[in-house]
Length: 273
Image (cartoon, rainbow, N blue to C red; front, side, top):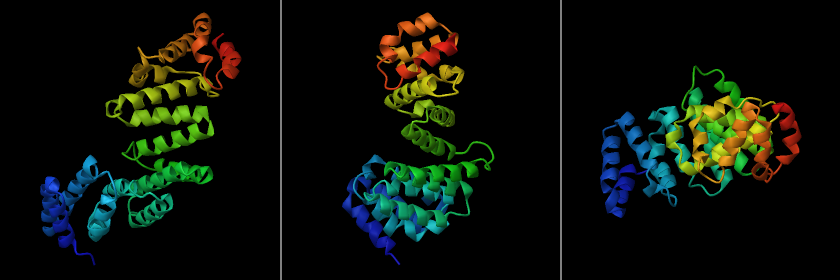
């Protein structure tokens, strides 16, 4: 059994700037106020001050592990996701997440979030087959959940990145839009909005079976490209959607530079007609 009070006291003394936070954690732990403690830990692990080094790993090993069985399963996984980011060995992180999945199996949402994190790690190390299997497994579980939950956005982020990696433009387009439908666009940095808008627009034009850009054209994420050197993509999407062949062709100097795009032009032009 860990000496939790000693760890918390040592932590208070090591960083005077955060002493109040550590004291609050100690107070809630001593009083066994598990819900309030969970909320405090969730705030703690998201603090940029603790994002460096292995501080969160030590926090888990010396503190969180002592009361994790009292934490809401979904909240526990949310906390764990911050901890694993400090694990430099992906195999260690995968093992840790697998163990966590067993601990939270009473909650479908928690299991889904855990499996999604495992899938993201598999994708990062290039294990595409394992990523594909994870996506298929999780998608089936998602379909059984009532309505849209907090775990949906993380799943669609993973699935869209997987489809982007393997070059499945149509599936990427579909799930990237679903991701945006699950988040508040204002929570995404402008640079991320622009990158998502750009890759979405290209995928829509390149994807087989994508004939309607209505949902993308109405989404505010596309506006992040306006008045930038990528505005041509907005203009191209509108030209295609309205069937304006001449306008589409005048934009060729821009879209003609994109890898893979020129090969699809004849088909796109036919579809516009």
